[in-house]
Image 1 (tube, rainbow, N blue to C red):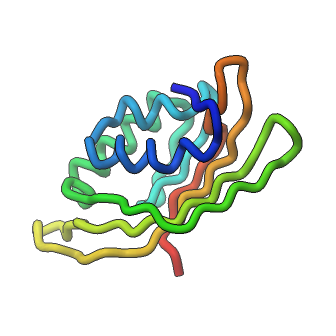
Image 2: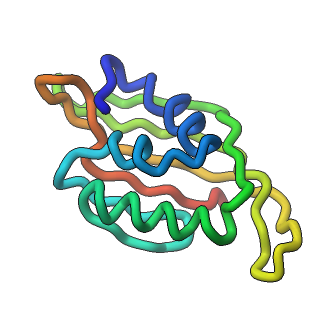
Length: 129
């Protein structure tokens, strides 16, 4: 899936995350995209990205939800931009299944414009200090 505007990414990402829709999440990425996940996992391309996210959602993020916060979009020329989105991640689980609380996170995506719209070419999802 591509986006008509970069600001459509964060709410779509949060919605797909909440629905555990790994295919939708992976479809936001270009074919040659790379992704660094919250757990430090690295994946290249939508298939590996889907597998990485699915593994994380089967564990610590099985009940996790994202709440959107501040967004910043920085254009880089006419056909690229950087989207920085703050999220609060709640519903995290410890390995024993007990609640781990919530954390502030930042999702940073470099997006490129394609003939069909905007896609992620590289993204990092990190815990906010």
